[in-house]
Structure formats: structure tokens, C-alpha cells
Amino acid sequence: MMIKKIILLIFMFGFITKASANYDNLAYNYTFNSIDGQKINLVDYKNKVIVVVNVASRCGYTPQYEALQDLWTNYRNNDLVVIGVPTNNFKQEPGSNKEIKDFCETNFGINFPMAEKTDVIGKSAHPFYRWAKKNHGIGAIPKWNFHKIIIGKNGKVVDTFASFTKPNSKKFIDLINTEIKN
Image (cartoon, rainbow, N blue to C red; front, side, top):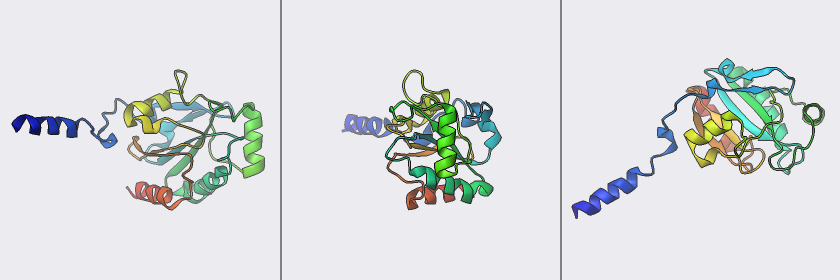
């Protein structure tokens, strides 16, 4: 009977949740090259909630740009930043950085920070995405465009949201509001 209890305990603790991740470093250690050729230093957003979203212009989820811009407009003065990371990993962002920027500004009025076109999956994934995977698990790996990674004010991954979760959904906004209050 004692062996069964030990096996049960090993099994239970073998699935430690993402909240107990042992971070070697924080999101603030990472930078992106911006779509304008500048740097996006995540350390500049220390003590803010950061929403990092891989985006694409030719995706069925592209209309989410509008909700992301609304999120940025409504919350940027409340300790939140939205960062768009264009990627062609899913073959839906073939344009140049200039074409991407023009598309976003013309069609959605985007003025939140945008990175240059970047790999978000695989061996060539940006170091931020490799860090998120290491510390949060497979949920941090984008399965498609408009995958959202929420970084808390402590610089750690709070949660991730699949592409189909809209940035204006109740679940998403409730988490943002909770994290802003922390």
C-alpha cells in the first residue's frame, strides 16, 4: 500500500503547473528589432503587463488587429503594452517590413509597437519565444498567427491564448484587468 501512495505522489508532482516554472531570466532580458529599424527593449516595459502577439496580414484572424489596437488605446495608460510580431512561419505574411507596416496603419490604424518580421517557431525562433516555451511549456508555442502571450508585471508568462481567442473576449480582458491590478 505504501508503494502505491509513493507512486501516486510521484505522479501528482510530476505534473507541476506552469506557475512553478524556475525562470533563469525574465522577459525583460529580451529585445526585438522594430518594424522601423529601432529596438523594442522589453525592459522599458518593466512593471507593465505585456501582450506579445504573432501577427500576419493574410490570416483569417487578421481582423483581430482592430481589437488589439483597441486594447492598446484603452489600456496603454494603465500599465499595458501590446507588441505585434509579424511572422511568415505560417505562410501568411509574405510582405516586407514596409509593406506590413503600411498594411497595418492603413487598414487598422495600428500604432502599438511592432517588431520586424520574425520567426516565432522552430530552431530559428526569436529568443523570446524560446524563453517562453522553456518557462511556460508548449502552450507558449504559437500554433498559428494571433497567438497571444501575456507577460505579468513580474516579467513572467502569466498565460497564453490561442489564435481563436479574441483580444476583446471577456476571458482575455478579465485576465488583463487582473494583471494590471497586481
